[in-house]
Image (tube, rainbow, N blue to C red; front, side, top):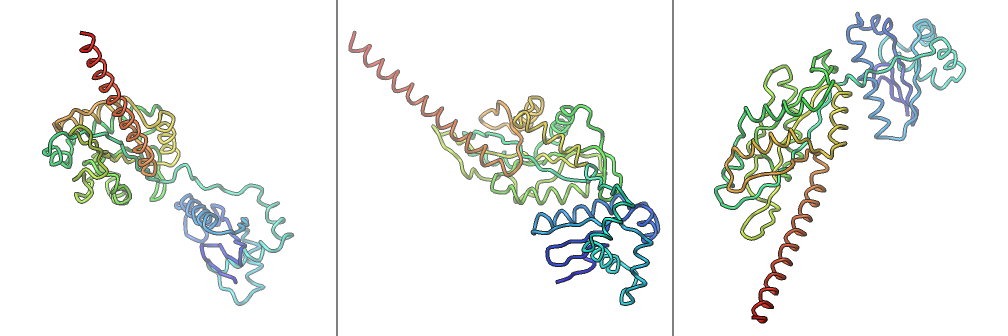
Length: 334
């Protein structure tokens, strides 16, 4: 089965995908200018990559040749110049090995998509081990966090990225550098997917604004201690602080690799987060390191935290039993 024009210059026949690739002068001839040429390459790359990841297809890149295309078009009266005709030409050349080799000899190098400049969004969550000792803490923990302190969280993270350029827009699809945003409320692990979707949508609307804070929708704010572990009248429950990286793919990837290399823990950032949570004046002070991990890693980290907490509690109970036994033994000696 054949499909033409599934993307400009791209056709498909069963598992074969023939993809014409335009050069700057070709793109200008079809679209009037070269202004959006880099975006075209990026859109083409993403379209073909999605096909490749979703299905078993064989992609053949066909260098566009205006003269060869015009010759083919004159010989095929049923086609009128346009995206579908160009895709039909690409398919005809993709299945003709000699014709394809001739085109490749005329154009030894194909233009590459600027994937490193693609505007991307990556959401991380700071996993805050919250201890609650009184019911009033539940009302406090869901409140909007102090804007000034959240800005310092974002600034502290930025300072951990030496050499990373400031964010600047190049086109609707491309940019350079990176920006960091922080959610204005703590959320709960059950809301991870919803929070990611909401913040990714929101961040595109505020990219050009100076503020570094994103609004976590109130329904997703931390409101009750689900999955809480109660020990000696103290409730342990995880709260998540969203952190959003947005910018060029190469810059965001750099930040992601940095976080992974330190297991998500940056001391300067943790200190600012601890101070921000401390401003809520909970009954039990938050201390220690706050790891930032992608949403899909949160539950694994929580399982590790719970296990350590339970092991610690068990060790403390064993110690208490030993002390009690020793005290009884001392009494018998006396």
